[in-house]
Every structure is written in structure tokens, then in C-alpha cells.
Length: 300
Image (cartoon, rainbow, N blue to C red):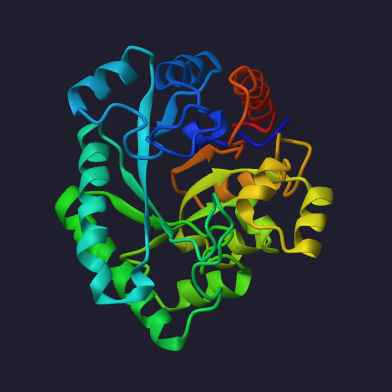
């Protein structure tokens, strides 16, 4: 019998339905997403890109509740490594998302560093490595954001290492964690992105367990990943090649990740995200059903 993962709250997200943008004709309509994520057996969801789901709190609360769903978090992207000039624009975005998340009783804000390489066009926007000064801007800025989000909205900020951003590899993740206050900033460990960038999720949980505040469950196809790495393929085109795959066919093994997370002895969201943008509208639901069944077999 698998270990009972009674501290793990499993959910899914618009990302697993091929949703990357607030509005895109190639994406599943939001009502269909809500219907299908409930049908697949999930109880928790994320908001996805701001504007995809209704932004009126009363309407969103009604649409979610009548399908038996609850919201765990909202998500923002930000470029705080650029310094003080970024703060006002960042806070304007954060206030919209955090305000909506709080209004529907979410508890977390997932913060993703901005891309250095465009996820749609693959255009290189910035150098992939930060300078020392930029690292200072990034870490101090995230601490400031964590403090203000908690004071204003009561949400916990969890920073999401992500491919083609400045927090991606094991070296970058550890540098970020070692340079930030654990009381202000946690980590959203995305198992797929961390594996994509060469990291070991179980090792990270065992080493920096007190910083793990949230999980995204995702796997990568090792054969496609090897080709992506060998040829320097940007993240967007890599997703279109199927680099993020359906569990349990990829890496890392999710059972050991969930067991390691359970051992932390804290309640954690574990939100399934399988990047599939763009995808046919009939593709996500069967995958979601199978993935929910697989996670149940792991004890979640």
C-alpha cells in the first residue's frame, strides 16, 4: 500500500488544459475547463493567467463553488531583478491577482520570474545570467513583495523556478533560497521545470524542506528533453514537441516526491500542471482523469 499522503492537497490548473494566456482562440473556454477539472475528480484549482477565469469575485466564487471546486492560488510574472523601476508595474499586477485570489479564499500567490527568452517567439530578451547587482535586486524585491502581499492580502508568496527564467537550475535555486528570508518568501517547487533544468526534486525537498511552501506536479519526457538540451530549444517550442508529458511516463518519479513532501509534516498543495499549449480541446480531460487516478495510486 502507498503511504497515506494526508498532508497533500491535490489539484489542477488551467495550464493542464493548454491555457497559457488570458484570451487565445486555441485555448479551451473557461467554462469547459471548470466543468472538466471537476469531472476529472479535482477539488482545487489555480486561477491561471489573470483574465482567463472571471475577474468579478462574486461571479468567480459562484462558478467555482457550484462545481465543487476551491481556489488555492493566483499567479503573477515579474521582473524585479531590474530594480526599483519595476516595482510599481509589478505591484499593479500583483494587486489585481492577489485581490481576486484573496476574495475567493485562496492562500498563496505563485510568483514566476520574467522570461529571459520569450515563450511565444523564442526571442532572446535578456542575458540568461544575472549580474551580482541584479541578484540583489531580485532577492530584496521578492522579500519586499512577500512582506507586502502578506500584510495587504494575507497570502503567502511562493517563488516558482521556471525554465528560461533566471531562477531555473539547482545552482540558481539554491542561491535564491540562501539569499532570501524564509519568513517572507517560500518556494513553489515545480517538479517538471526543476527536472527540465537538471535539478533533483527529492534532494531539494530533503535539503531545503522548510522553504517548500507549494508544489506543482509535472513530468518531462527524458528523450525529448535530451534533444531540447542538445539543440538549445527554447521552452515554448519544447512544449510543442511534448517535453512535458503525462505521468507516470516521465521524470521525476512523483511517488518519491510526494512521500518526501509528506515527511515535511506540513500541509501542502500539489497542483498538477502539464504544459500542453496549444492542444486540441478534446485532449486534456482524458489525461486529467488518468493523472488523477495515478496520483490516487500514490496515496494522494
